[in-house]
Length: 219
Image 1 (cartoon, rainbow, N blue to C red):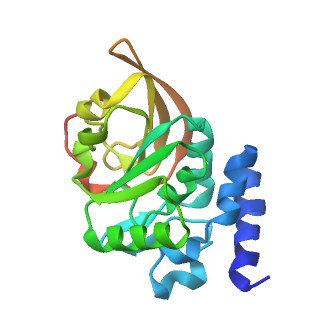
Image 2 (image 1 turned 135 degrees about the horizontal axis):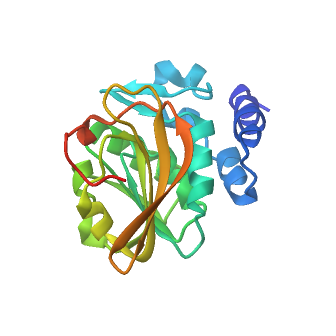
Image 3 (image 1 turned 120 degrees about the vertical axis):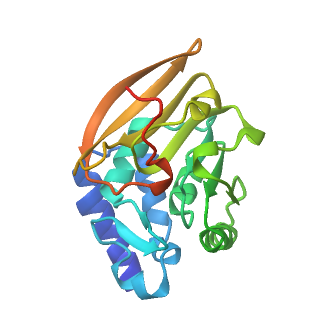
């Protein structure tokens, strides 16, 4: 095995399995997607570090133990149509593509989008794509979605994202108030136009600047 393969296996064993992640399909996805391809060249050596990894322009890849826990709680299945908000260079999009029917990633930086689509093509993933979009807008052109995932901590969740869910759909995010060190991972469920939420776990995930407005839809 090469060094990256060893590091990937260590990530799965010591960060993901050790964090109560047991879903076989999810573990296989993390085992097979080369995280090193989704980071800048100068970050390849630390691609599998157990912390949030800066990738430039104020963005980051969520630490594997938090991302894997979020995705397990999302309970993704092969019928899901997923919107991956703030996907950065597409690592999360690639992981989700192994579990869902299809996934659309959106991000605000063209350089990240170019990297994402290049890697999706390299991995021959044909049920996913990444496009340029303001994160708070979502992507209504392809709605409705059965699942929306926000990659990073947010101070609020725009109502229009809930509008893009099917009845019975869910949204998963980490909500963190200004100045707080820890955010709260929550899963929201939409049923007949009402929204309920359930607390999952605490996470120190960095915030996404686009979701730093003082108003919004919260529980």
